[in-house]
Image (cartoon, rainbow over all chains, first blue to last red; front, side, top):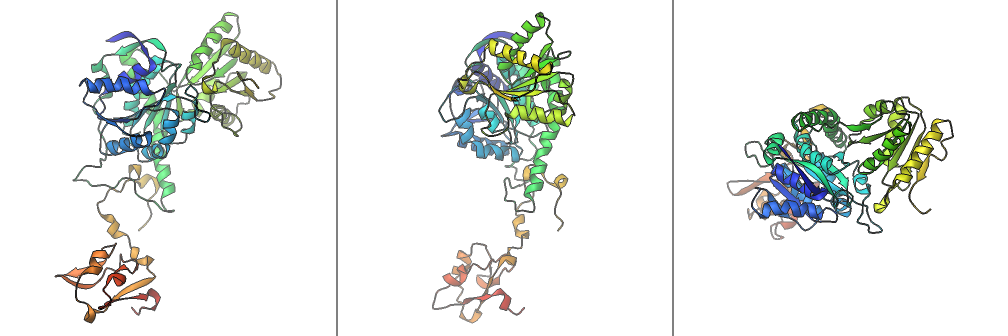
Length: 393
Length: 98
């Protein structure tokens, strides 16, 4: 049974983690994640869940404690944002290399400087090579559902890779939305009991975790680490199908919104996708073949699948909520272009930098992007390829 | 021993064997080798206490020699052996007649 509730993103995800009954959570607060931690901590304080909540002195300690707990065989979770994520970053890479199935909601916030507590995807993007599976959520329902599925994905014997659930700071974390919350028992039965593979504290099978490598082994170890990522798309689809069968909401590697016969499409991650859908609907009513593609899984990047979904389009715009500060275009732009190039597709692809530091994206801006796409589809030169939208240049 | 390939590696780069650092021949790193001068040794065991690699071999409370598979030739044993005994000398590895 599911209950229709009105919750902020933080509360919903905090509740999701609590419903899973993780063995250990080690966390440190940072805006806009803080209320997620508070909501979770309430369950512990009220004695409703058996989780060992370790209140550490920093995010670096949080991830370090999570690694220790997970290596010992505990189902482990934490949460962070922005600077907190940056602070724990050296250990974040270690968690994935040690193949520890830690689950971490990341409430996406801009990274300093200047200090900004509002939404953009810089934190997630800085972590895109960290070896963590990255899921993006459009709204509170997706953030809640993704968090529950994340435990099954991370812990799957073919995966054993930590999972980051991204959702937009303030826009989703602090906005009350209606969603369907699962019963605690259903969450428990869906995630099941965690069966770790090797465990640190097994006296009958002693192991060393995190040894030194020299030039003769590091390369092979890093390739071995990648096996989890390679197996992830299939497992993510299986877990998502099962979730859909049981709870009625089906998810895939990405969402193709009115994309089937579309000629013009915009690609974006997170809450902006919701805003774009409004414009897509509007354009469709006017007879324009507009569509949208919203990746759910950013790591591992489903290059072939996305290239396939875009193959019939005449022009594509990719929106990035992170500046690579010197790269040619944003991270999503680069992944999409590379995927299309690999598939032999050459329709014009333009990149849009938007929304840094919580800068709002409005409907007019999106409409202008589709207008540009229409010109590109009619043969206008794709020059410049890269745009900035919503800033005072 | 042949190096393992990607497919043969244990998950997460763990080492699934307890105490296998003993298999690592760190003795090959030596530039200087400790030589025990048994007549001068009073078996105070200072060398055994200070050796960072547990490479001083003691049997029935007496120093009998060095574990050359693991001794890295740091010379701490020779340094800690009290001056009045001077029972350990560090000699260039390449000059030692095997």
